Image: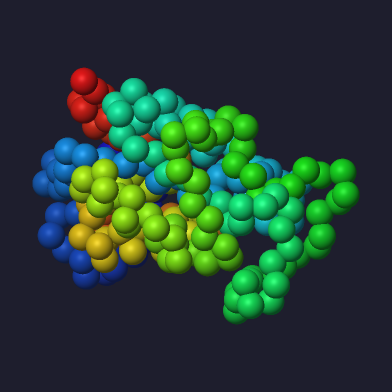
Length: 228
């Protein structure tokens, strides 16, 4: 990925502080294993669709399109796929203890004509054999869920993390995956945020510390090599 999302944003002194040639893809090959899983974080109507208080369709819907391609490739490669949403019950109104201490305000109540928002968008509907994890109002796909147990059972050594939002639940999932000694890939086009500054800075931070931020095409090529 020659054109990185943080190009022109990160000051030279910050780039120099990391050193090690991270600005050159030739010197930084993608570090991946042979048993990947795809983890699609919170690609629900509530995050993707601007009709909902926390939705951001401007970047959410393009990320859905990228995830459609990635999901098809993961299925073709036989890679396990996991999804997250908040609760098992559409329209669940979380109690204060369930919501926790978010500084982000709850926002206005959606209009009555809107369907429940905590539902994965139709374009990414999970298949019956694919697992949907319910992480409540917490950020990481690992927190309070059996995700790591499922990954161990499947012999996974690499996770491709996608979804919304880059600076929130995606980043938290990436850090936990890294903490479990998993390889991490984040395809740029398949993650999104309300803030493009937060999106770009967090991708930089992830690439410098926790995993490989790559293009969608690089991720598709990786999965294609595993088919069969």
